[in-house]
Length: 232
Length: 161
Image 1 (cartoon, rainbow over the protein chains, first blue to last red):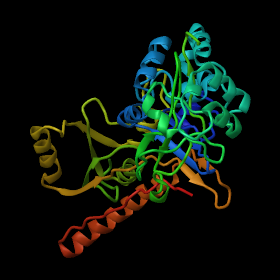
Image 2 (cartoon, rainbow over the protein chains, first blue to last red):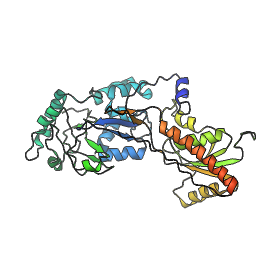
Image 3 (cartoon, one colour):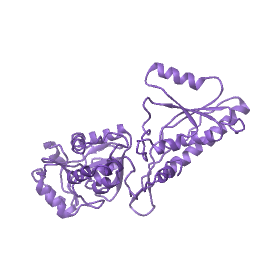
């Protein structure tokens, strides 16, 4: 433990909080899939983090967030720990030592990031709220229910920053879930499906699907949602 | 390092990041080996790994690289590779240590469908120690038989339930 910096950290008077499945100092957390399995997604190095952002079409969103916060989220172990930055806003902000010196940034971060539920499947009310505030309802696949309904019944909701019509055929109803994993590959990272609207964004993603699950319907737990400074 | 140390005279060239290999190298360094890290210009991917001080000095990195020396080489360039090769092949009682180790922060219980992030990267710690032990065994083999060995100690730390 001492070799890993724990003792030195304690000597500096730092109190490290319990962080659950959030990776300390970099992006990492687990997601629950519709079938109950969990996947752990980590972007430890800069390359991994960037690849993750690319795969989730979150590059632009992260740039936006960086600008809003005045922080470099690309930086390894930078001013703001990445994972909490967009997954666990309140605790993230609280935990980030540099931010403690900038209370105005803390307030700004809280405002930007919003107060989202922490580590629990998003409630139907939130899903419905999000669906009503975005334009995902328009995205339908033949024979499927409206996404908002499916998301409501499943307690899941997915959206991405890319308003792509191509996502439409990825949406379908499956055991109350609202998405199908298209083009999943063993060890691959894919955006499953999504539709966003004016500042609301997020993504579903799926990693390391076993081969037999490739191209099967699959939906990750609602990943990070971030609200821009201009809510819809 | 004192000449009385058991590994005095053994030179280790280490190209590593994160936990396993740096820990293995440090174990050998603390037994008296001369450990020389080959680092990327500006530091490797774990150079700023948390926890860090207010000055952004990584306590993690410092903790795992005690008693070592370091040379920053751009091994992407031919000149850099030549330098690294010269360092590795320099006359002496050498051994090399390299790891493409992974982050190790996930474990899970047997029956619960829940993954658990572990703050102690146990597999990496074990791997590092095994690497150090294996390297010493290989070095003994070389002394006895005059032939070196390639020791592989891989840190497979992603556990999926």
